[in-house]
Image (cartoon, rainbow, N blue to C red):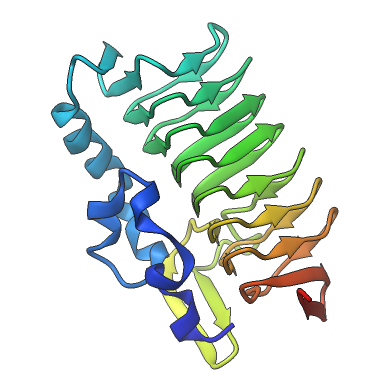
Length: 223
């Protein structure tokens, strides 16, 4: 994947997120990460009280969303229409959960945008990441958002590395991506639209749109 293929306009359909105004201000999706919390707070204050409840400071939940009583939620957070937050989900703040999205049992989110219809349904960790429309993470798959050497994260494009200046950066996951069970998306991963990641993968590269990641060095285009 080349640098020009990693832009927000290439990875995401912005009509499927309430974060559209924020994302339209930037070229690459990781540039959005430092601004999610402030955006959520400002947007939350504008949401119609006829549609959203505000159970505590910095938390806005659409009246059609289903939130398990065992879920833990720390603001600022917006949970959109018909979203489902299941048993023991942990939402740690700076999070937008789109319409019809699912955050499953024992899944954890932090500094994340989930577009509409995203599913992180079983034992997932998603931090400092953006998941596009209808993206799905299989059971136990996670985004790793800090390098083991604690150095700043680089994005490894085919035509050269991009210095992000960020210590915490998980994965930018495009619309329609399927991540297989038990996979780890290492810091700085970018996955193009409609790509598939095989189960139990450790992804350290950027994956082209419409491709299948089988293992390191074996990525094929869908037929």
